[in-house]
Image (cartoon, rainbow, N blue to C red; front, side):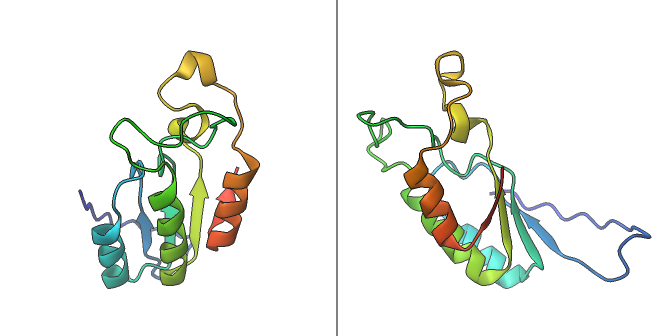
Length: 127
């Protein structure tokens, strides 16, 4: 996990604003990230994608990766926990929309059951 701190100034923002950017979790364990978020207490948590490996699975496709990890389980749990820390905004990355097989899967949309889980998490989906 890498943590980089930037201090920016803008005439358009007249107060301090702390934004945590979390990306590329790819369904991995999130406890250490969540611990850091709680400690940092950001005003906003932004997730610009690749929170999970795929959200475009069609009925009948495997729901586990090659190592046996259940796809999305950690991603959805993280969204729910992050939303308890600060307002959380999530947008899809390339992995959510087409996984590793870009040519075959590009353009497929997220499964409705996955959209439902995102909505239940408390995070705002920016799609």
